[in-house]
Length: 522
Image 1 (cartoon, rainbow, N blue to C red):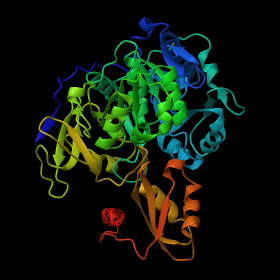
Image 2 (tube, rainbow, N blue to C red):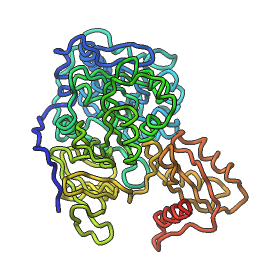
Image 3 (cartoon, rainbow, N blue to C red):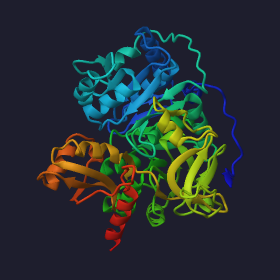
C-alpha cells in the first residue's frame, strides 16, 4: 500500500531559492539573521539581503554565469549564507564540501562537480589551493584575509546591480552536495530550486517558528541537514541563527545559555551528551523548548532521558541528502510524539514499504525497505545515470536503502539499513572508499569495511583484511587514516583468512555485519 501524509498538500510556487528564502528579509530589517556564536558578530536580515545582491553582482562581473559551480569549503560562518544565495541568485550551483576533507577528497569533488570558483577560510587555504590545482577552479576566495586568495569581502563592495537571470525552478540546479547514496563512492546529488523550496514549505507546515525563535547551527551547513533545516528553513521563517564553527560540548552549552536558544536541531550523539554529561547541569538551559534529532536513528530511551532532564520537547525526523533532506518529522506537540519514531510524513510525501527479498508491497506495521516519492526528491546523481537508475525508478520512487515501517497512525520508524553506509555521529562513511585505500597498501590482498556499534558515535568503521605480506593492524589503520577526514578513520582492524563474496565478486557485507553483531552480543 502507499502511505500518504496525514497533512494536506502545500502549494509549491515556481520561484528561485534565494527569492523565496529572502522574500521577507526587507520587512525583518534590523532583526538579527545570523550571529557568530563565539565572537558575537552579527548579520541582520537587511544586511544579508544587501550582501547577497552585492556578491552576486560582483561574481557576475567576474564572469560567473548560470550553471557554473561554486564550491564552499568552510565551517559555519556568517558569510556562508551570503555566498550560497549570491551563487543561487545568478542561477549558479553551490557544491558544499566538508571542511574536514583532505586535499585528495576535495580535489575529487571539485573535479567531479566541475567547480570554477571556490571559497574557504584562512585555516583551510593550504588544502584548498592544493586541491584547486587538480581541478577546474579558476579563482579561490577566502572569508577573511590570507595570501594567495581573493578576499570574499571584495565581492561586498560597489553597487548591487544584479543581471537578470531566467531560472526554471523545476529544472535548474541550485545545490550539489555529495552523498554516497545507498552504496559506493560519494556522488553529486542534483537538487533543484523547486526541490529545496518544496522541502522548506513542507517542513514549515509541520514545524513552525513562534515569535522570538532562536536556533543554534551546531551542525555544518555543508551537510544537507544543516543546509536546509538549520540555515534555509530558519531564514525563511525569520529565525535568528546562532552559528558554531564546530561542535564542542562546553561551547554549545554556553551558547544555548547566553543566546537563550529556543530550538536545537542536532544528531543522536549530541542528544546522548545532553542526557548524560555532568557538564550540562552547570548551564541554564530553560529557554530551550524543542530538540529535533536527525541524520541517524535515536533510541527512544535516550530521547526520553534527554527530554526529562532538560524539561523540553525531544523528538526525531528522517531524511536523506537525496530528499533535500526532510521526509518526516514530529510536530512540537507532546500529544503527537511517539518515542523512537521518525515522525509523520511531510505534506506532498508518499511512502511505500517493500519486501527487499520478494519485492512485495507491505502494509502497516510490516518492516521492509522504505521508498519515498515527493517534490523534494532529487533529479538524480551528477554524471552517473547507472547510480541514478539504481536509486530512482521510472515512477519517481526513491529507494532509500533504509529498513523501516509505518504504523496505522502514519508514524514512520527506521530500524536498520540495507545500504552499506556507515553512520559515524551522523556523518556518512562509504566502505568502498576505505576498502579502495586499504587495497593500495602492498601488504593487503583483500579488504572489507563494516560498521561496528559504538555507544558514543553510533557506528565506527571496522576493517577486515586479508594479508599477502607482513603488516600490523596499527600500521594499516595509520596508512588509511592519514589520507581521510577524521570521521572516516578506521577505528578497528582485524586480520582474517578470507572475505566472503557472491559469485559475481561482490562483498557479502551483510554476512560480515551479522557475524559482527553475533560476536558483539555474545
